[in-house]
Image 1 (cartoon, helix red, strand yellow):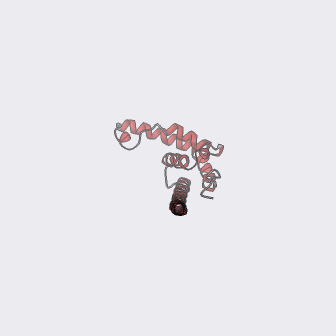
Image 2 (tube, rainbow, N blue to C red):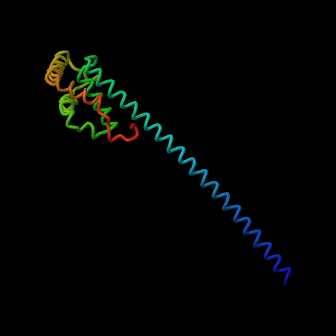
Image 3 (spheres, rainbow, N blue to C red):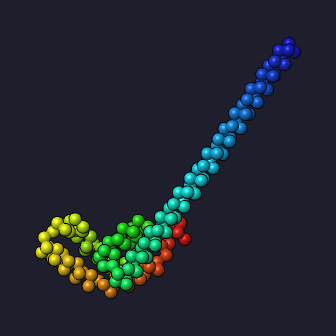
Length: 161
């Protein structure tokens, strides 16, 4: 009987040791997986922060270009709409950008690039006349609003803070 108990006890200890080893292996795998997830999260956050910083830099660059008359108002407003809504859609709806939004709404449907080139010269002239009229009408208020946008800190975008 004693031999049977000794064999059973040895088998039990061996099973316990094997299970402990397997538990230790699984624990190492979990820790390794958690470390990899943290690393991926940090990398994703870093990439998002860089994208946000690039968007912010581009927004300020284009806004300054419009203010300094290095870029046409309509082109600047179109580009800013895309960039600002990509960074912070709430900022695009700010009351301080009312004229910019109004100008965008009036010019967003205007053909550009190949669609513009496909127009007849008369249609292009009429379109340019309408666009320039809108730019003249909103010029002062848009430039003022873009000065505000250059300084706007984008508080809803937490990673760039």
